[in-house]
Image (cartoon, rainbow, N blue to C red; front, side, top):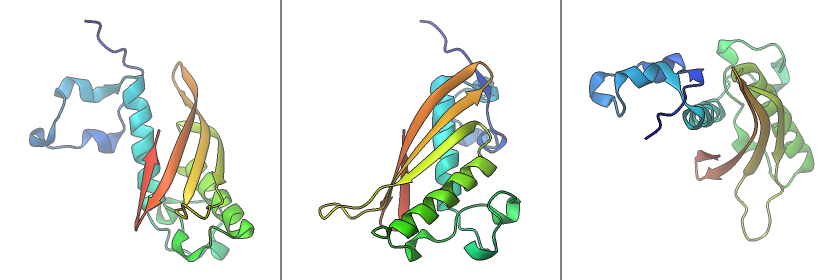
Length: 153
């Protein structure tokens, strides 16, 4: 059986686990294979999208953010049927990902218009994964399920 090729370092917070929580040998925590890298990016996207930025959107410089500005403003106050609200949310998510997920570039976010059958918030994220020799376009679908967001690769 061929061993997976490790292509990227494992993010720090993914390595900070107790021995009891390990689901893989400790030696594999140092680096990720391509599937692990994509899964790691999906987890980080979910973390940043479920985190709430405490500063008001109007006072936030989307291009110049710090750790205190981590996350997005509460998207429940926006109406996904409003074109302006969808554009505003897409711009905020694009800037947030660009600021906090350095493994992705050329980020493009589309907040889809809900239909009569399925009114859940749906967001499409297209980006270029760029780590080491891995350069690959990725698409993530984000779906609101009640109070939670689910990120799918």
